[in-house]
Length: 295
Image 1 (cartoon, rainbow, N blue to C red):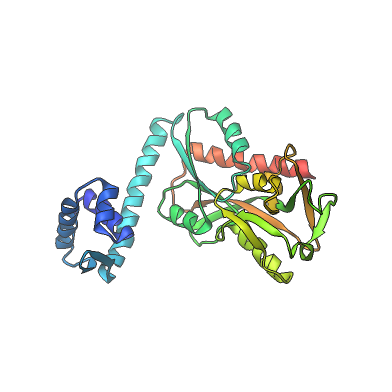
Image 2 (cartoon, one colour):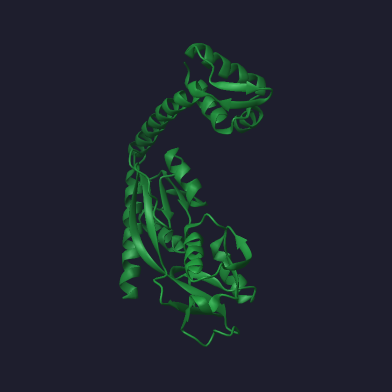
């Protein structure tokens, strides 16, 4: 059994499509099929049910997938650990986030300590974030709400009030607070369902007796203030994303504790580099300073 066979198998198992897997791996479909065939011969059992060009992982394949993922995960951990110890000043940190409003300030603070560490950040929903952590494709997740999995550790770093953002010409712009029921007939702009803050707000509005009507739903929370400023709709925006330079009035929500919990999460069994440990310290310290400033 070869390492290449395991890597090819994992890709085919996740996509369940030979052509797409070959494209992802940058190999010919014929070469990929032969490699998977040799692996099945070595194991003495088929790993997929085949119907024409379609593949579906069978019981043998599902069981072997768990072992193969674990084996490759450990090898990748070993590679990262050696790299960390042989080149402690360099390295990289991979992040997945559902909330990015505080990220520029956090990265700037970390750059002061570790200027040579490279970052890769991706904005995803909570479900995708969980899969990335399980596959070892990210070091940390910065999310709201906190992730709840047995093998994932989550540390709540900030309790962030959620405010209602309205343009300065809006009927509520001369107010400092508003009740949810007063927003019943408004049009909203927001992120898509699947993001923690959106799902939380939807449930609260439903408890107040209405379903919020969205004229825009996107993947980039940072753009919402621009839509509010353009009077396209109003939005629920966390306090950490508030910008005093915008032509927007921010209102507190009366009678409801409208807050989100921001958490930093990591996989319990994953090797954490020294740079990543320092990054965690910077994240916690940044939000602690933010909390002190709000008191």
